[in-house]
Length: 470
Image (cartoon, rainbow, N blue to C red; front, top):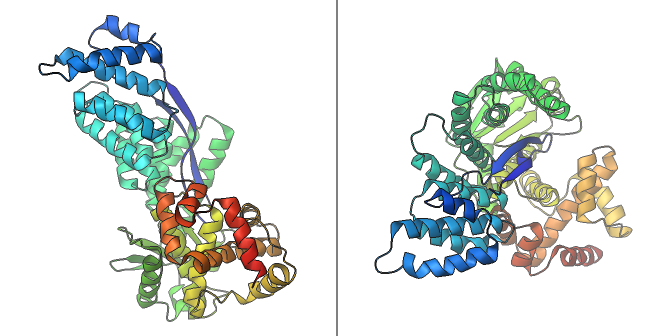
């Protein structure tokens, strides 16, 4: 039997201050549809694609004839699934007709649904993969030993598409059978972290850290555990307000420092960003106002605020400025949250940060064309006067480095100006179009071609020309 084991990063949450990623060990194609007889099953394992194709062509007239035999239909579906597995590296568009044919022969088949989910996972189409795993879970035959491998894959497909509650349900199915399953503990713990179930996060990950197979994974777990415990310590005595869109937590006496920051401000930001990016979340967004000293236990020293999944964290105590300043911060981080949800965490950093600044400046200054005052001098000197532009891949590297304030600023400015260029040449509707393409699994190059007619190198040249004419 041809199997494929994936060891890699399967789901991550984007954040301006921290990136969580889970190393996942998943075995695909362990549940193929087998022919009716053991003899034919053994034979199928040894056939080449050419031999399989000949058998398929020979069987089709009988399987789809006026009086089809059930065993012939079953065997033909098994041959089609075997062909799919052998051609797993082909584009999904090539494989989908084979799945549809197998499904027509054997509708609602448990094994076909699992392999369908496996292929879609490999193609990074986790949303559709989850639908097929859900079907398989519903169709699962009664057995003494449930299919924990399928549950694990379903859990990570759910987590990747930010359906964290469903992810936990699947990981808990694994843990009901295997209480010490490392992957399920890690997946469940991380999903609970995203839902801000910090007590559960600690419960799952304290077990996982004891059985981590590698030192890097142990370090990763300890980092997430520390964050969860810091959150618990910081918000234990917090006060909470909630409406239909937001849950606001005020840690300590941070509420006293916020002044006029109210739900009205968040409502304004909500409609500004969701209308601009054409995406309205179906989950409530958590906003946590920390005392500054507590925030910097979990956030980077240079970050003014942070977005993590559907959670926004803002430090308020020392350094609090004006309502407009806080409004800009919230707009920036809320934009990251919307992009995270709309693209299923597939947006490149330059576009993510560029759009976040575009919305930040709109909220703070009333116009997306007015840049932050501390960026204005760098923009004028390096980008306009000296024509010292940088590529967008370099901009991403500078932002991620966080080592030199001027370099980080240059990375942010280049990202912001690239988004300004997009708006000038292709209109603000291009933001929605690009994010939608990315959410469907397209690469940034494919998305740019689809929306602008230009690939990334061509857009970089266009961006450079646009800057030189400012």
